[in-house]
Image (cartoon, rainbow, N blue to C red; front, side, top):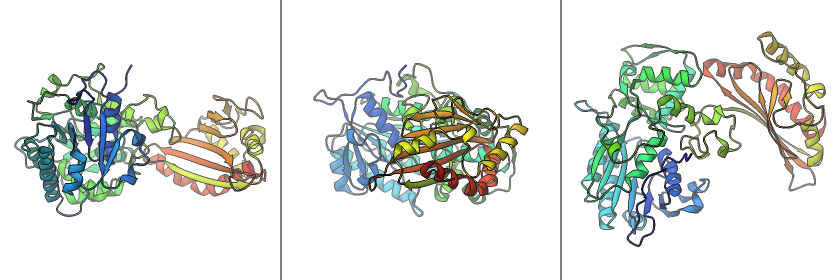
Length: 503
């Protein structure tokens, strides 16, 4: 099975027979970063325009693309970026600008159109928003519609793809949905929760974007794109709760929440920046349902069909669901799927993770430290605060958990899959890494990770101990803060014991 969003699509070639050169703007954004990966997988050559090239250094594709540094509002920078380009992806917006973002978007689109025509670009591909007929549009959607019209009138064949809510970890609309649903089991909400929405998985958006590059040049039009299901926003929250393993939410629409109050409410409950939340909320009054599916006659559906909402949600929750946390991003359950969180996503993307990090330097060797790490738990206990772990184990048994009674298979050595009290060995790399996943009863998922490495400045070593907790629902957040005072007792002493052998 090929999990690439672009599998099975035709490849556009330049006049010299090479794969077409694609320019991607907005590379540091949610869509742009994932689109670059898909274009490269499909065989295209990729150039990136970035205001600050240094921000791209941590991207996994940086060594496979050409980077042009410059501002999209600078004509000379645009000329450099568009020279020799076959397909230009326009993924620019000014949503985070505090003032006059509509005017800025118009100016960017007009300049880009003019320079693209001058450089004989063969195709512009633009991702906008679904436009509801006969409805007054929010400033955000109006600006998106105006941008599409400017690009289509540029003289360069343009494909405008119009999407509603994009389902994928890192998408602002999806993260807003996620945090509202997870943190509020009971909520009073604005009446826009009854507006119909046609969400689409990020993998399907990317397939349309990649497929648009090879469409015949005579095709220049706007096309709605949507997933296989239509919900109200209220229904979508309930579907999300079910997909995420949460109880059904109690959602009470009220007519008194104005867009301003709604934006403040969303800004309080979710980590999505207020300026962005305000413009997204203002757009939720508009129905976003695809008017037709003409695009499916031009760009074939993937072999397994368009992605159902719940599957898209589960793919987007890979980071937590697969217990890979932030250690190995490449090990998600569906390798290479565009729904995975990326290390370069915004801090508020991918779900809340609470952490307690302890770093201890020691004169002991890596081998000595590792010996103590590998023998943790069971009869050896955890630290001077073993009593605290015993108390937690007793509480776990009282609510039907395994408690500490399982002990260990071997008092000194571990292997992947071993039980260690109420932990399970999830990853083990001798003399380097031990990761334990909690199997105690709690409203969330938890891991305890130990990493040891030589200290480059001494003959000793450095231990990094990280406790990680992914809460589930509002109760999960409350649980973390309820047990937080105990962290100051158990975690420092455990780190000292593993690093220095001092109880």
